[in-house]
Each structure stands twice: as C-alpha cells, then as structure tokens.
Image 1: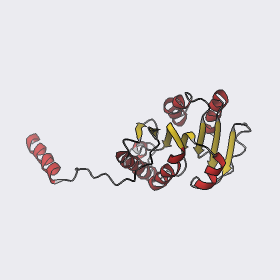
Image 2: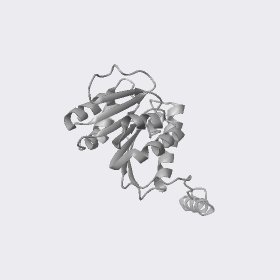
Image 3: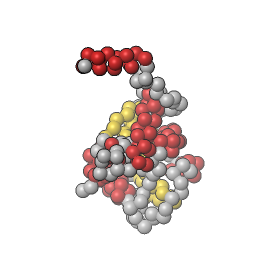
Image 4: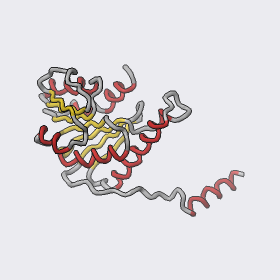
Length: 210
C-alpha cells in the first residue's frame, strides 16, 4: 500500500463508511484509485458517486452507482444540475492551487448537507521541501498556500465548520459542516510575527541566551 492509499484508508474512508446512502462528489479521477473505493462504500451503503474529470475516465467502472462527467471541476451549474440534490461528501483532488481550491470550496459548500464532509488532498508542503526526497518547488509552494488559505477561511467560519488535518504523505484537510449557514468571506490572517513586540521578544531571548 502506497502513501496515498494509506492516507485515505486512515483519514477519509472510515468517516465515509459511517454514512448511510451517501451522495458523494469526487473531483479528480485519474486512475480511479479513490473512485473504486468510494464505489465499494456506495455498494455496501446504497450510495451514489458522481465523479468529475477533464479527461475521459469512463472506463474505470461500469458500476450502476457511478455517474462520470467529463467536464471542468468548476463547471458548477452543469454539475449541480446532474446531481440535483445535496451531497454528503465532497472530495477535492484536481488542481492543487490555493485560489482554485478556494473557488471549489465556496462553489460547492451550499450543496453540502449539514454534518457532511469536504476532503481536500495535498495540503502539506513538508514532503516537497528542497531537503526532502520528493523535492518539488511547485508542490511545496502550492500546498503551503492551500494550507494557509484553508486556515484563513476557517478563521472566518469557526461557527460554520470544523477543520482538521492529516499530515500523512502530502496531507489531507477534513472539513465537517456544522450548520446550513452560508460561508463568510475571509481575509488574510494578520499575525503578530513581524510586530515590534515580537521582534523585541526575540531579541530579548537572544540576549538572555548569549
């Protein structure tokens, strides 16, 4: 079992398996690894899976519980017209760029049921640091920016959803919807890292150490 499968088996599928008759929206199919596992759950729990990809992945399965749509993940009106009801699970695993993840989160949040889950893949930059085996500039920066924008959105919506993270492999964000309120807009978190008070604190610690 590779890191991706282990991550999902450890942090995602145990939560989804508890849902009876789940309606699942999967953004990103590729080879169908997550798709096939979602379909196993749908078969066991009488669920329905809608999968989206810009490439034709329709040969992954012939399961009657599966609907594949060859389209962009942000083709909101088209996709919503095919689903026609609220969903229990949203899995985001397409373009791993912060602004795109933000667009998808705000775009699909209204059709997520209360107590439903949103899972966002690739939120950890740690495996892609220059000193690590996977050393990759694009993944490092984009995963870090995605992590930070999720914190920013959560900071403006702590009453609306719970947020947790798995840092297995490239990471996974787990959002659980607490109510049917609309998501509030967010602003960049302004920390006090560069405040004069913190600079003085660091200088004082250095003086004491020396």
